[in-house]
Length: 182
Image 1 (cartoon, rainbow, N blue to C red):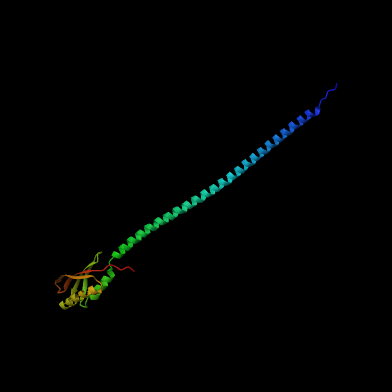
Image 2: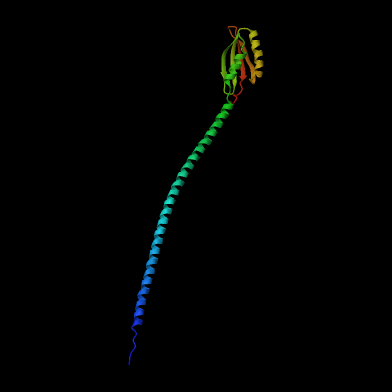
């Protein structure tokens, strides 16, 4: 009797197991390598994004500081415009004393001299003059009537008296117009 023993079958089984182990090991190593590469890629991508975020944050900070400067300049501009409007308002209410004095000088006849002149901010003027004769006073009063046509809005004669030296004192009230804008 002869026995049949097949030794090759066992050998094949033994050969298959190490191949399966090698394939599983290779796949495991391959998966680990892919996972490491993916992790490395993720880390590099994260690092790049972090640098970009820092650069953007710096740009935003710079823009915010520039915006703050622009707001400060805008506030200063509005304050200056407000002050300028107040100055214009004051200037428009300002009395043109120079024009008023020129007008007064233009109506003084040759025989009359100014003794005193008082000007106030409202455009009111008190003037005292000395005249040697009543004819000069009459001429001066006639000249006062023409002041309304020359630009002074109001000219009225106040007190009239005669001093010890026989000269005349005239109290004159003139309303001088406001200064014109140029």
